[in-house]
Length: 232
Ligand SMILES: N[C@@H](CCC(=O)N[C@@H](CS)C(=O)NCC(=O)O)C(=O)O
Image (cartoon, rainbow, N blue to C red):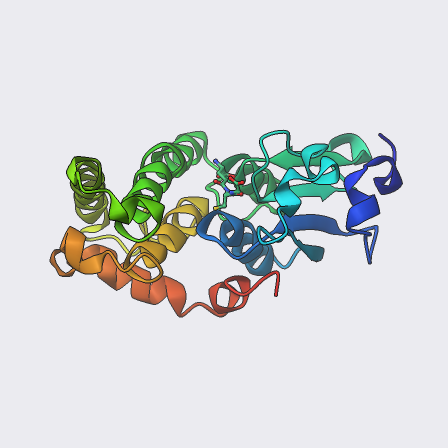
């Protein structure tokens, strides 16, 4: 593909600035990871709303970019080799944007892999487990009489919060002094667990003092405040 018009998705969501990164998203905990990262880096971008109310994520145009029908996804018209690059999976997008901007990932190899390790801890643990807890506690699964599925995800979420709590003891951020893509991935999910999912009491959130401290610092960052509402 040589320019954005070669991508079917741009027919449904035309690029306002074809020279900028195109973001296809919704302000969910996975979606805001990327809008927050774009705000933090200052990379210019166009944001396009993929509405679940109208099942936009199942449209042929969206599926042409992400066959897995999930937001977020991006196209960078100026990717590696000065060619467009399309990407889905928020973790992959965060790594890409960190490398492109040279920000929010340590430069030394060991620090870089450790950051990716904590990013993967979110992608494989926090995201899926908190998400299932939301389903069984607040959404369709809450009416099931059998509470064992809910309790399993409560326990697993508590365990993961405990791991994070220990990691954050004596540290400002997951990687210590440096704010990184690991924090940008983890904290929208922690916020969502106690906010939108209303599961704070269920998981005993008050016990996790370090997690609470870092969450407060995270949500006060101007780029986070902005990114949490994008796309409008
Ligand atoms: N592992 C994916 C998960 C993305 C994901 O689950 N996105 C949800 C919103 S938070 C979605 O698009 N759901 C729409 C659907 O399943 O149809 C990522 O991190 O990008």
